[in-house]
Length: 269
Image (cartoon, rainbow, N blue to C red; front, top):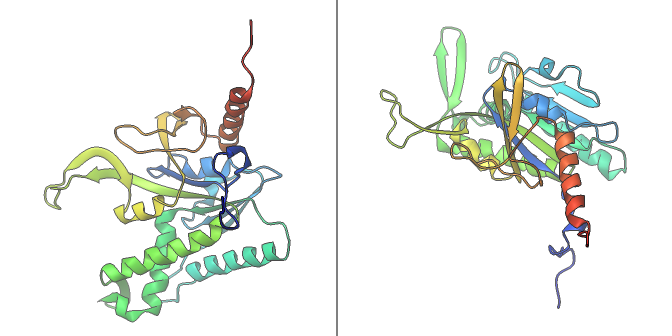
C-alpha cells in the first residue's frame, strides 16, 4: 500500500518516540514549578523561562538552567521579555541546526505571565489593539477587544510550536473555580469544577498530550492527578497510576516498568 514519505505506522508503538508535551496545572503555590523541574537529569538537562519571577521556588534543583525575563516599568519603558523569549528560541534552533547539544526539556513558567508578556509586546507595538488609561503621569495599556486576545494566543501558540520541534516541553498553568453559565459579577456562581485561568488559555491546553494537576494533600505534601475526575479533566500518555508522587523521573520510570512487565511472556504451569 502506498503511503507518503514520513508516515508512521501507529501499530508499532515501540517505534514511536515523540517529544513530551506536558501541561501542569494547579492554583498558585502548589508545586507546579517544582514538579516541572523534576524532569532534569545530567543526560537530560532542562531550561526554564521564569516569567513569574519565582525562580527561588526551584532552588536546589540540579541540571536546571533558569532565565528570569520580566518587563520592568511597562509601558513607560518598552517591553522586552517576549522578544527575549523568541530570541532565545531562535538561538536554540540555530544551535540544534549546527549540531550542538541543547537542553532536552523546555519549561515556560507560567502560561499566565508568559501570555502577559505577549500582550505587552502586542499592545506596545500595535496601538490599534490597545486602549490607554491615564492617571496623572502614569499610563496603562489595556486590550481593546477580542482581536487583541486573538493576537496574543496566536503569538503564544506560534512560539510553542517552535519549542515542540526542539524537545520535550512542559508548561505550567494556574487554575481556579469554574464559573457557572449564569454567573454574573454581582452574583457569582460556580460549578464546583476547576479550569485554567483565564478560560481562553484552554486553547493552549489542547496542544498538550499530558495534562496533570498538582494537589496539596497536607502540609508540604502533594500528589499528581493524571486521570480525569468529576472536577477536572486530567489526562496522560503514560501507563501510570491515576494519582502519584510529584516526580517526573519516577513517573517515567513507573511507565517503563509497567510497559516492560506487560511485554513479558506469561508463566506456564
